[in-house]
Amino acid sequence: MTRNITLLPIALLACATLAQAELYKSVGPDGRVTYSDTPTAKAQPVDTRKAPVASVSGTALPYELALVARAHPVTLYTSDKCPPCFSARNLLAKRGVPYVEKIVSSNEDIAALAAVAGEARLPLLTIGAVKEQGFEEGIWNRALSAAGYPQTSQLPASWRNPPPQAAAPAQAEPAPPPAAPVAQQRREPAGLPAEAPPPAGKAPPGFRF
Image (cartoon, rainbow, N blue to C red; front, side):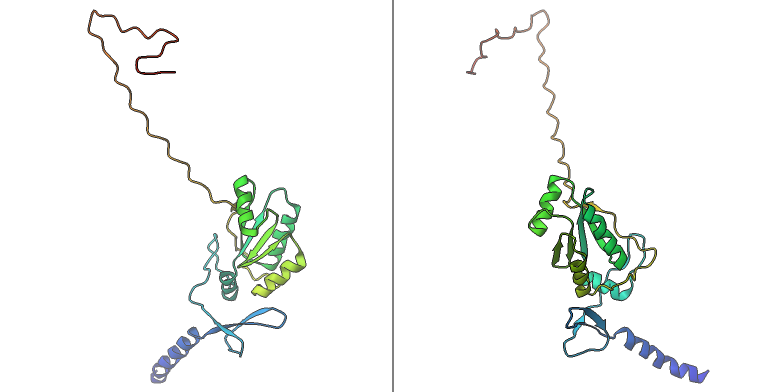
């Protein structure tokens, strides 16, 4: 019993040391990004204090994939009438890339797409600051690998991406104008006829056509 009590602080200290271990990011000659807890000459430390926690279904990403998704978030711009967009979705699903999809269907969406890419061409893939317009499987795969996304899916089976949303942020509807106050009805003294309206074709006093 005494031995176990003596070893307990040492075990806790070892766990704390592992929990505080640094994570490093390095880029190979082929552009591939790797993460490791072993520093190298060209490796850079990674801030691991925050990372994407969970999907809309509450499922957490694997730790290393969460780091990549935080450093290089992926957004896919698509449209309903866009056959290459289906291929783009399939590629991201095959590689297990968590992403946000934005639908382009209105003039406001087209303007938002052009503001991001410079032209209205679909599909558009953004990986952090990198933009790939028009679906090219080889180019998109290389861009995803360069960002550090794995070649094969590491997503949990229960992972769900956020539902697609419009490319242009929804505008809040303006509040209706306040109702005009009801004019107070004019009452004539009892027994007197109401004032007759001005003759047709003539302006009321003080007004000119």
